[in-house]
Every structure is written in structure tokens, then in C-alpha cells.
Image 1 (cartoon, rainbow, N blue to C red):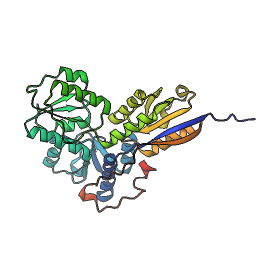
Image 2 (cartoon, rainbow, N blue to C red):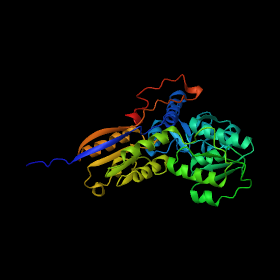
Image 3 (tube, rainbow, N blue to C red):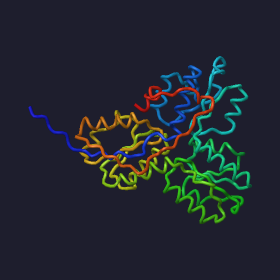
Image 4 (cartoon, rainbow, N blue to C red):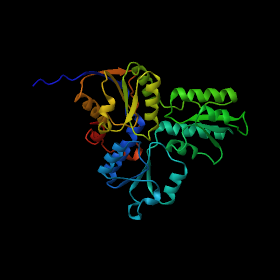
Length: 333
């Protein structure tokens, strides 16, 4: 009996994709803390927005909590790690009041935004934060400053409706994981309405967000389908879906694992774009590729714009602990 040939498929695999330096550092901090101090290591909120990563760390002995009062008294000598998204100033203050030992895994680029916001405030400017309400990074940034000293703007419509107390004394910062194009539109509108609006000392949207969006823009034209590997609560991953559609992909979807793929809905395609948000591990990208190879005669071509070489050091307390490839194999393969 003749076996039907698999239909041909070109997979445009984007580079850079997946983990950024800040996410990689945050996961390393939890892994190294477990090696150094033993289980359990507590983590306040998801260390990064990816369920696979969270479950992998749980299997190693990490315990995720929403608030510090969930840590049992008998474990207060164990470390608690703050997530890569950053936390309000009240959280380390709370940890100190409870005599907890904490390790801050806030991405250095998020910390930079905190410093930019504090600088605006120190110079007497009201801070305009462009970002998404309820996102942990936004909560953390707003929590660096006294209540009432930050106004959140999400859209151009928000910028049109915003009525500040002192229109000539404003400074803005942005969430690091926004759409570059959307944010530019909001900033332009704010500048039109408030000509004296002061920009931050450096761009707030991080290099990794920008790089991932740029390569998706280049790869998207002509794609029958563009898959972004990432979590539904990952801001930068959702932005990549939007970028792919705007740049010319016929369809774009966000998936967490290969098991979520609806093959009937995918149907007959000849060109697939594939990228991953900054908190999505490479093992899932490989899983997606293998799922398509099982059904298509797939050829992978790399769509690459830049190579990222950034590396952020872990906390000083952990730098003498050896981190091996085996320690990170659960996410890197």
C-alpha cells in the first residue's frame, strides 16, 4: 500500500526568539537558590509568564505564592524570590518586616524604568506611565512612587482624554514589553497635546521586545500561519501575534504547547512563521517544530535580524554556585 507523501512546508523560524537575558537570569536565580539553600525556595508570583517554566521549577522544589504571608513560619529562613516583572517598594519592605531573606529577580531593564520614573518624580514632574493596567510590571513601576504621582495611559484615546494638573510638568516612561508601533502612536499624541512632556533618559521598551517584533515583521509577509509560542498573560507574546498580523501573515495564533494545535483549523498551509515570546523556553519551540514535521515535509529556514549577546549577572549571593547545562535542561533542552 502506497503511503501518501507529506505536503511540503517551509517554517520561517525567527531569531532572536524566546528567552531574553532578563528572563534567563530570573530562572537561573531560582535554580541557583535551590542548589545553594535547598528546597523549598519561595517565589512571589510567577517568576516569568510561562506555565511550563513555573511547573519545571516547582518540580525542582520551588513554591509559588501570591503574597509573603503565605510563607509558613518554619520556612522563613528560606529564600523568597521576587519575579522578573519587578515589585512595588512595599514588597521588600514587607519582607524585611517579616525577617525574610529575599532575592530580587527584577529584570535590570525594568529596574531602569523604575529609576527613570523616580528621576522624573525627583525633578518635580508628574509621571505618565504608558502600559497595561493590572500587569505586574505596571503595578511594580507605579509602586515605586507615592500614590497619586503616576498616571497610567494605555491607548491613544486615553492620551486624548488625559487632563493633568500641570500640563507643562510631565515626564513619561513605558512598560518594557509594549508594541513599539502602538507606543510610538501614544507618545506622539501625548507630545502633540503636551509639548513640554519630558522623555526618559533612554528608551523604556527593552531591546528584546524590539528585536522580537522586528524579526516577526520581516518574516510575516507571505505566511499562511504565524505561531507565537507564549502564555496568554504574557504581554510581549500577545504583541507578537498582533505584529505578525499587521505585517502580512494571513493568520496568527498564540500557543503554549504543541498539544493545543488544532490541525483541522490549521489545514493546508505551505509557509509557517514561528517565534516565541521572551518568557517561552526553546524546548517548546522544538516541540512545535517536531509536531509539524510529523505531518508535513518541513524545511526550516532561519529568519534572523540580530544576534543577542546580553547577559545579566545573578545576585551576588549566588555567583559562586555552579550553573550547569543539566540544571537548565528543563527549559533549554
